[in-house]
Structures are given as structure tokens and as C-alpha cells.
Image (cartoon, helix red, strand yellow):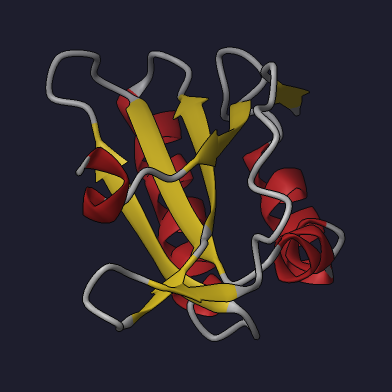
Length: 129
């Protein structure tokens, strides 16, 4: 898998700080994975099955706050996974997990190119004040 110029996240990614209203803010680790299926409908359908299974199982992993699967309307066969993790540690543990390895192996032969993986720095509404 290809990893695009990852942005470094906040150094206190797992720490909660008080927001302006006194509520606790959580710094999340956000990761995206973009997959482009080979141009056949069969490969795309199989890839969607692989990614759907991965999403369901990932939601059960320790530290996973949220994970979604989206499919492009403008680029048929392109699928985006957006993951949000409690900390760098839980995100790294997941990327080294058997679940991630199984998903990667299941994608072999279905992709037009290597997936694009990126690490994002989340901006909250509080940051925009």
C-alpha cells in the first residue's frame, strides 16, 4: 500500500483539553484509505464486499471512534475509507493487526493501483474561533 505525505498530528493526540465552554475536546487521529477497483463490475463488487467486511470488523477494534466507507459518484470504482482513532497507538496497532493484513491480502488482484493512505490533522469548530 502507498502512504501519501502524512501530516504529523498534534503531539498530544490522545490527551483531552478543555474547550472554550469547559467541555472536553478529544484530539482524534484521522486516516483515509482510497481504493480504485479494476474497471470490471465483478472486481468492483468483490472489492466492495472486502471493504464492507473490513469496516464492520474495524468498528469493533479498541480505540476506533468511527470508520466509514464511501463510494465515489464521479469516479466509478473508487472507494474511500475514513477512520478516526483515539490515539496514534491504537491507530498503529490496528495497521499492524491481522484484520488489516487480511483486508490487504483480500484486495490483491482487485485494484487498479495501490491504495492511497493518508494521515490527517483534524480541525474542530473550536479551532476556527
